Length: 509
Image (tube, rainbow, N blue to C red):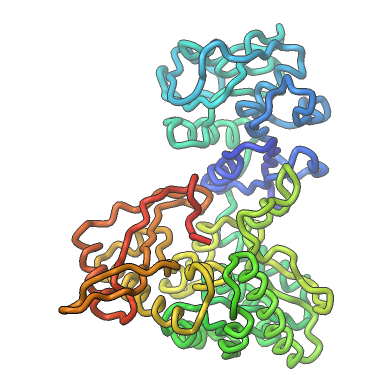
């Protein structure tokens, strides 16, 4: 059985980042909401309590059955987690007298404490809290302090319970990875044996056991997640996997043909379905983003269902759901409301009586790519930027028409091809072109024009949760703009989006 660390989520914006740092140490972990904590079995090696926007002094503050696990497993409380443990044990937690946010340095580190092994005095950490631990009970020992935070870290004597009031998971905490390694390896005794190869081996074995001789139908998108899911399933059940790739008319230029060609070389059983007109008909007259998404989702399910029914006795629906989708659907405050409505978690219509198999639902995006590389999947597929489920429909602001799709595909192809030829495509996390619902005056030749505007978007990110705009070279942007305006009839102006997430989102709709 795979050993694991459980991360208790109290609602912090950094909870997923804790999980990513644990995974980077080749240790498997799972995030669970504080109000839906699982039973702890012999595979659990330790528990990490996350931060939170709440104060432990609030009446509705998140709770945790600390006494039940405190002497049986190592526990690390981070920020709110540390304050909660102190508060639970009758320590004093009160509002900070000074704002404790940003970089700080550890002026004192206790000698010999395993949590701070190989971490030097004055190590920089990142604080982010409105409350602070003023006093701790007699059986707590203070093991680190900063100039303004006396209880920057503590250890409950004769136990493996620790608390820290800073965030080791953010890069501003210079020795944060070392601290997490000290806790996970030295204190929890984790073996660091969770690797792409071990994931592939155990997942294929599990899929064989789960699916047997059953047939699985899977909708391919051409993206990383569905492709890796398909190859894993193919290794497990071979010819019993039936892949369907739907051309919804909202893909990038020539994408349908090129992706189908890629899949042929992977040995997958793939059927391509041209359903462009069905999607265009459904989108006619719609300009509201949510209505467009719902129309696309409805037609996709109809097309997919038509094709799936042509496979005799199919019992399972394969999906490329990844871990952030799962986390968002069971978040601390209930299913996440709203940033996106096109995740592939749940959402199966009642008439599609299939069981769901999701081989990637414990992986983050970068882990999916590592697994894909270990499976030998083509680098062109693994290196593709994320692409939204509704495709170009949410990069065309307002009503979608075949003509707008054509214009956008042409402009986007010029943009992406230039990023590739300039050697910056792989340095960008996601890039795309947006068709704006405005027209502007221009001069082309000796004539005034009144044509369309497109915006270029390129962001740097780790997982899409936050993102910063890419500082592409001006000469490259100028080249792209010239090529688009000179070669794509219908566009006379190109702009560049310099918004970060937050406050903006990566996509415009």
